[in-house]
Amino acid sequence: MRNLWTIGMAAILAIPLALTAPAASAASAAVPPDISLANVKAHLTQLQSIATANGGNRAHGRPGYLASANYVKGLLDAAGFTTTLQSFTYSGATGYNVIADWPGGDPNDILMVGAHLDSVTAGPGINDNGSGSAAILETALEVSRQALAPTKHLRFAWWGAEELGLRGSQYYVTNLPAAERAKVKGYLNFDMVGSPNAGYFVYDGDNSDGVGSGPGPAGSAQLEATLQAYFTSIGVATRGTDFDGRSDYGPFISVGIPAGGTFTGAEGIKSSAQATLWGGTAGQAFDSCYHRACDTTANINDTALNRNADAIAYAVWTTATATPPVTVWQDTFETATGWTANPGGTDTATLGQWERGDPEATTSSGAKQLGTTVSGSNDLVTGRLAGAAAGDHDIDGGTTTIQSPAVTLPSGGTLRLNFSWYLAHGSNASSADYLRVKVVGSTTTQVFQQLGAATNRNGAWAVADVDISSYAGQSVRILIEAADASGASLVEAGVDDVKITR
Image (cartoon, rainbow, N blue to C red):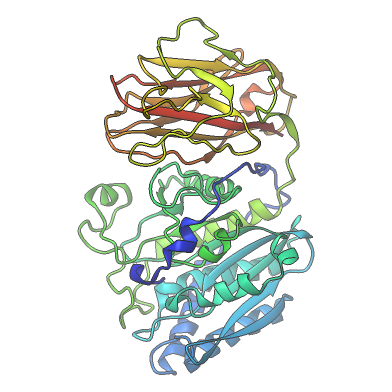
């Protein structure tokens, strides 16, 4: 993983905002495997041996890197992958990406899984990033052992010169013809997944954390949810990590390709709260050997490596074998379809009530009400006018609600509710302010909530995707609520492109 100061942020900040994306079906054609920790560690031992025999590192342009690439390629060739050693030049030296395609699957629907293979010159790079490289390598070999027949086409990649600025992955994305690039529907990145003082971070595809660069491209929320589902299944809590541009997802999201992945921490310091959540030592780096000679096979947390390798396999099997969803109902708000404001007659907001319309942009210490929608010209927005000041038409005085027309859901199968949203507020807001979404049927269930806080939060479209299968066979309505409940705070909200899929 690169040092933060090497990042070129302009491309990352130009990431298109998340639109809508089909939710993956929960059904898959095969059960995700338990990846052998012993096998993953055997690959790390080989990478350590290669570094030891080649000046102590596996860096770009050094013999240890090409030996590492040939090691990976040789195993994949023997396992039945179609592999390519893609060369590029950077800083006067030749670098290599290893690209491996598994036969079959829809060639127009490609899932890529990647990790950088190079180390820094200071050490062998066993956690950074032998860990991610070995984990996706063993996952690829398990694909071969099980003769997996995915619905998507599977492509694995090991990137060169990541430590010098994502050079290998940038070369790959830049030189991929536009027609081929359009076929890549998702990219999963794994960079440092065995940190000794490990955290469990998942890339924040839906911008639920509300910090940094915003959400990933449409579909990133689903990749995040898939990885979170695995960790939830083993009782491990996760936290979001921002798309800050420090790893090889950067070139993919900069051209609108959805991305996701996991990360166990680098030079950052583990907080007391994180140590309580995950164990380990507060006040110390997640990896104190980050970019140092001591990043050897002794610098690996076996538990974290094992969990992340299994998470990778789960994400690959679940995503690559998913049946494409069928849309049951959707509304883009370009025409009036029967949404009802204040359906219960109990709203208390005096301004900024929900309405369907073409919103006008407002700013106050950054974007607040967004003047752009996810699709078309209209969305659901709290007071669509801008006024002379940002607070002229924001929510004031309490709660405002709006409810969809009745939607008849089919019986059986997995049903998912997907929508784009934002909640923006000033630093005068609090956790009493909120955006909520509920499903109203035989019972009422709150399926989404974003609370305010006493900090500035700018408007940015994000995507939510929730399971509503418990309502199968019922007639339901979608109820959207927003509130300025903490006094005279600046609060704006919007919702667009609501969809239910099966």
